[in-house]
Length: 296
Image (tube, rainbow, N blue to C red; front, side):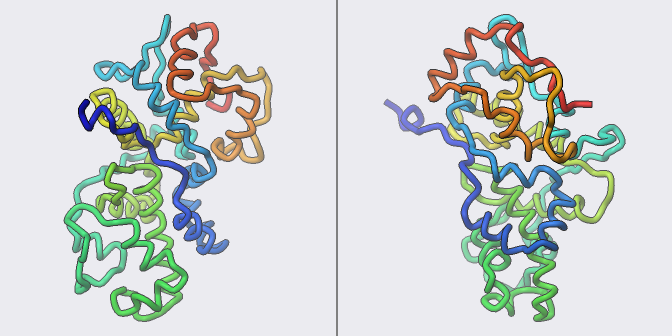
């Protein structure tokens, strides 16, 4: 039996403890700044991943037409749905795309305010490890440990501002645009630069395209889901659960991730890949929630 066949299917698990600690250590002002730019997306750290559901979905994915084909109906995540989940849904047609172009390590260091003179041990062109960023900006003593390797004029208040930007880079690289190596693509720094310095830009299209691409790769045999699995599982479970005609969507109409667990708390989800496949296979169009009530 081949090694590929024996390799277990994997998705991004719960947010790493170090990422959560970094988030809490940003303090109220830092969290407000991050949330201003990431919007509702930051709350995917609160959702428990379901790797069994994501693996089961591969059975039904049609990579030619980018749809899930079920018994007598088709379903696919839409741009509007992903935009509303992530908080980038308002005035979507007037928002501009962000193109994740390749970035040199020198430019990456510039955007992160890291000295280009440091030794790039274990960092290769095109990516960096989570620990590389965490050790400099995530740890409370990162300023003291790497003071001479950071471009902050040896000012801790400046470092506190820089670590917010670095957090968004790390968060997107780990939770939204992951890869099998668990490394952070340097092009994400450019995405964050645009997101934090220019108005009317949205992450929704690249989140959705990454989900489509990850589904297609896994349908072809890849064993790691290189897309935002949490948004995908939320999307499907909401379509599988019938909502009341009138219901509350939580304290904020701009954050439908925050209120997600409350909306689906009474959904009795299958456990395990085979159970999910069996359940989904026998669903018909009349059992699906076609319109999510929080969409405009």
